Length: 209
Image (cartoon, rainbow, N blue to C red; front, side, top):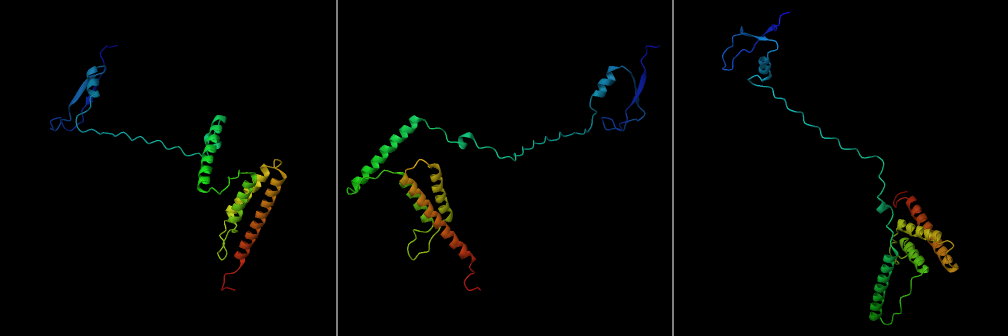
């Protein structure tokens, strides 16, 4: 076999030269296979205008969709932090000092007034009971239209019911009777007011039959 490398012909089909003259289309160049020069020339970019491609912009990542399940509340909101015995004692002592200071100011302003009675369980019942009957319009002055807060009254009644449930078996006979009577009275007042509201809603407007 002959060691002479095969020869192939490369034809330049460009119509114009680098100087802008019309190129002779018959020109052809013979290049031997394995020659490094044509490979180097072919790797160079051809003169003249080139097509420039732009890199497609990267798409921004899609935001994560919120989970349909409601997230659980943080632990610090789910339950209050535990107060140490030292902090509780310090707060109680500061409260007592502030309360005594207020009593001293009141006695100085009104020497005839007696000492302020201590708060008892009866006071707690009476406070919630009064809130309920005021919300039901019992404190309305004569000649005025009663202003009823039916939702506020129901909340006060429910508070008395919770108080009765949580203190069951831990009250004196007097405290238990007072709470039972207060709860019975406000419940009956609530039924009376709600029945009156329902009857008024069923009446036709005045002037219409």
